Length: 388
Image 1: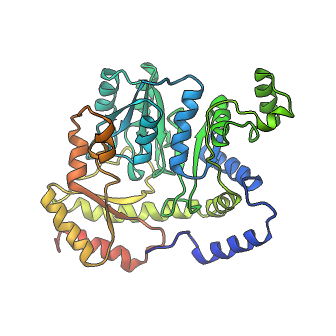
Image 2 (image 1 turned 30 degrees about the vertical axis):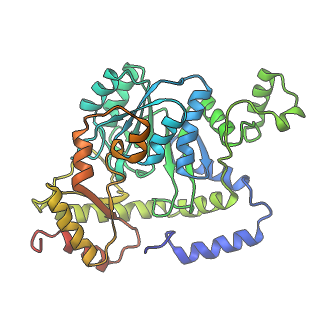
Image 3 (image 1 turned 135 degrees about the vertical axis):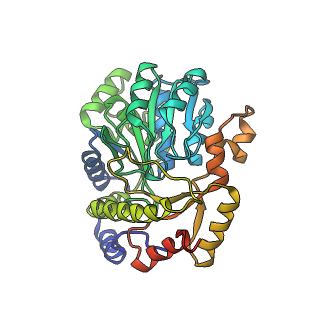
């Protein structure tokens, strides 16, 4: 078990002092301050804070639907190797979820296979996941989605800080979601964010987040919305403009976000160093498929992925990790199209050979910024070809 926060003890002390002294714990100035700081850090004009990354995903699609950019029955492509809360909102809001295959050498959807599938399925949007801090050829995907009028959204929950020469992950689509759950690059215990440069969309995200109210919009934006709906300032206290939920964070989320943002560069540097050191050993072991990440200019990986050449080799290496007490996980949730909830509600079957290989032959272990030298050595010992 690793720490919840980078600089765990100091963070807990600071949090206790904040809770004891602050006058308001419901969403307020600290949340707004964190939103502004995160937007500046990410290089976006807008950032909207939520109580979780899953809530951020839900709000992204509800806001699209509220604005009429997506409609019930539209087909939405998603990276087949992803997390449940990337797919569930698509299904819950009445869209048709279409899994798009992933390349086992990058773990991600690549333009050469993703775009033909999106076009063939007549998808109106593509919710792409930057898996475990790696990424596909996002510059090409962005260009081709724009050419075919496919709305591109990014799940960047595991890839905060990853970069290509063409830009930072999370900035290639109309909007991107982030998670601040424990073990992510930046933890607020629970928490999530959506970043975008689209002001109208950001307004709707804030409306969706707070029951359909306008109370979290700026004063100028409130005037616009109230004038459009002919609502007085008094009536606006309980006026609901569109469909929404209560997905609001607390001031604790905002405080922790600002606190952890101070250490983000250090965390990213350590994660990238760990990843490259372990990956170098993995590349020398023929039991693993080599990962391709040379197209990335920065890789502060969320975790250490291991793609074995066979399912039997996967069993072998899982035993080695378990024997020395290193916790392992499926590579995210494998092929989401094989998950019980997806099979229950989606009656179509899809051929996804890349996602199937990842599902059957891959797993990951953590990449924590507070690993000791001995812990890094333990991971390397498990994958060292000399000991294999």
